Image 1 (cartoon, one colour):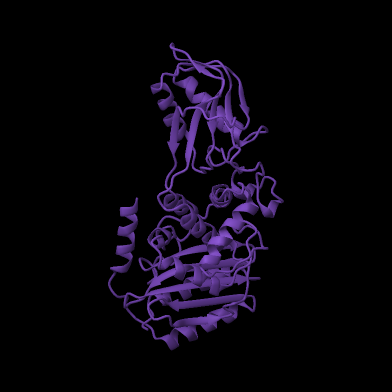
Image 2: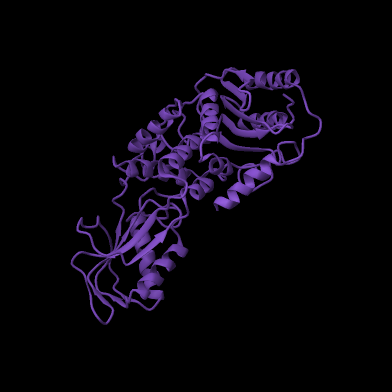
Length: 398
């Protein structure tokens, strides 16, 4: 994965110069014309990373609702705090009083312990069951128990008063399967039931008992372990399609890994510590940007992107962003423009809100960092203007 990321970044910087370069004065005039159409509750900021020169600024310090540009704050914090190569390890272990008998019977409960992996799916379940069979498990006399104690049991985030929110695409939890699928007994019960299903499918004799309970503090041997994709890969899965479920899970994970608790509030505290270290100020109430209470200025997003560009995590972060004509939220945007192959960005959309922030490479090979935030607008109309503005950065001749 790291080699692939490196190739993506090298390819981004090795492109031939774009045709029809434009001057700074032309760019500013063109952006001004379009920014005025966005209204007074919109801001834009763009900086040449090489020279530090401000390419464009309008309402750069105006704090606005960022929509899914909020994910830039969440994923950057996760990447820095947790590390790009870190994996989340879902484990299966016996209950403290369970006994594995010589004939392969586990006399007692089998516990599936969640690690906050938002990507847990049937591939993971088959992996765990395969390991259990190799460990000699042929029968389980007790229950299959789901342990989701790493996080709190709030299924949504700020915008839904922490209750289930269909905009997340699933119920939040430390142990979820299939993008947070659930029934009346919760996502951890659903995940544990899925493990039971695959155990039965693999000819391991199991009872009908499934439950959810925190695992005992007494350590027991790990019978199976499934490693999630790396954090670098998880933030790419988050940012490319703008996945709300992944973003909110990563935020809770930040709190859990900080040792303060796997909640949205604790995750925000952990994220704010990272952002403070980067010199970035923002009001966060969630990890996905679904709430209109989130606030950040275009200048602060540019500061975040600038700080990431100078860190070892920068290549992974940039590769997590969508690109015109490629898989993700920019697949059908700016495809026939100079931005294709030269820009990567994070989109943001709510009713009345649009955002686009990221990186572009100009004809001289310099990196331009930019942020466009618009509130109180026709979001579709604003995106049309964004799609005219950003390609100019790829043609800018500084």
